[in-house]
Length: 386
Ligand SMILES: Cc1cc2nc3c(=O)[nH]c(=O)nc-3n(C[C@H](O)[C@H](O)[C@H](O)COP(=O)(O)O)c2cc1C
Image: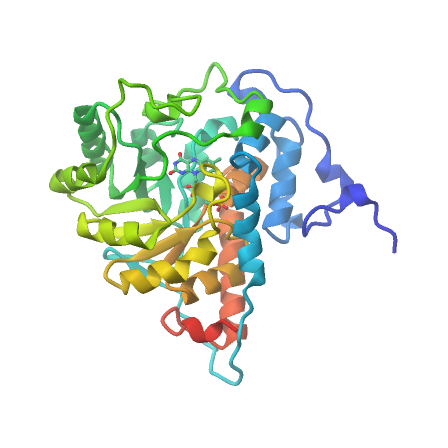
């Protein structure tokens, strides 16, 4: 059978019709969806198919915003390749008739260990933005970490869903305003603060610059961090430095767990615990900040060995398959997060697309656990890695 190369895209074999090129975009959020308003999500078999549906539907600027990484995007590539290189070592003839994929994170029981990572500006991906993400997460029983750079206020996100929410924080220069924001999100039912510590400035996002990334005129980010605005690789002299003391300060008044996102060095993992962090997210920001950082799958075992179960350990970066989740858990993660996939789900089908992405990954995780002979998350340890 001959297949035209234009219809063959990483792991995907979708009809040409669904891959129609978007028309031009203009600068309002409502104009972002450029193709079929309701693509047939049922045709998507895996996350790569969802990505192609989103690509056909959202404009180039929004697609590049999601897809791109820093500089030459080498770390983005390594995040995936590292998972692909790890081989699984199954056990046969074990009873896998009943699975338990549930995980307890800071006293909150989740039915499966895959969270929606924080990502900025959802209203440039879909007019319903974070509201659709929250609804989609709720329907998939997934915990959604709302970004500081949300384009929807936390009250509106909360109103739209009673599902579990964490809040990702970029500490503002104005520490009093930061404190008020933390109180506000906790009042709105956020059960953990996830401080991003790997972004004193944004990385060199070459592709975003080339595709002229800008927020449409009717999209606002109410809690936009000052550091996200720091362009050109320089921290403006007016910005206060961020250090470990800020974590101690946060811990001193934050009544919910404080999780540090963006740890890659085992020595920083140790300092995180000493500064009172309740948990750690091993992350290289999806390869969007410092290019040629190692893949998270490479550093994960070293960090797990340092942390030795003292605090919950989460990881993100390149997780696209249920088998990747098994590998992350085997290396010591209690749970994982996915960043780009729910954004593509949102672009492809709003709330339903987000739900579809999370359900697909959950289903793949269950298949992988059964085929590895591992019926519970606890039973997934390094013995499942070849
Ligand atoms: C479009 C997009 C926006 C992001 N915005 C944020 C953000 O506002 N805050 C943050 O801590 N991380 C942000 N991230 C990083 C993610 O939280 C996560 O670390 C990363 O996407 C994981 O890699 P993956 O996309 O390969 O799953 C963003 C990622 C993407 C793709």
